[in-house]
Image (cartoon, rainbow, N blue to C red; front, side, top):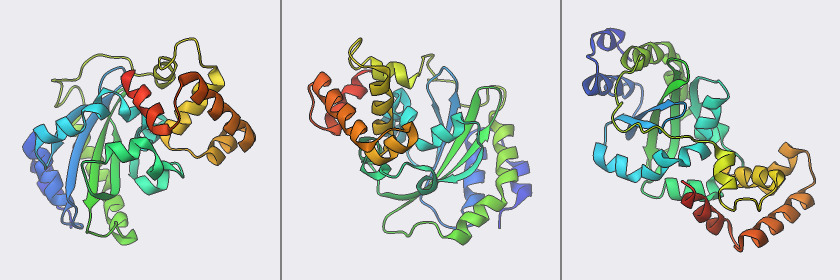
Length: 249
């Protein structure tokens, strides 16, 4: 069981997050613990990990540069929600077939991911990644409930560590992240606003059926838009579309 007094006595900085990780691991076993800070108008910053810090920074370089815009957890955050979330509960139905999923998780054997999202100062939040890798089993309902039960303590701890600047300012480069603008930049002046919307949703892992439902159009109309998009961009697959998107980052 998590010991609150240990969190209260934890120092600021890396050792403090080590203590938090150790306490969370008393609830159940997990492999990866990664902390990112997000701030509006800036690149996300890797704050802490129980893994090799430099290696994780290299592996997540594309994520930091802009792929986080496709992250389902970031959508939840931008919608104003905070708390504990599970990837499988919030991701689009075709997410595991998306190029983002294939490439972002290509360095790992992650089979399940939970994430605490903690709102800090205005326009700033922290994400605590808690991941299991194969051959371990996905998180059980009872284990998720245990993480949920300590949400108030985790929230208070993270705010104490990271509010008002906190850790990890180095490397947080000013930049503008606007997903529609990045999509338009794939082919300036060629794509219609509807095509930009559909590309966004495809990149995020929505199926044609899901796109049609969310936009209130027929599935056949989505298919027609997709054909037009591929023709305009002179591509033949979502992998090629994703590569074009990467270039805009």
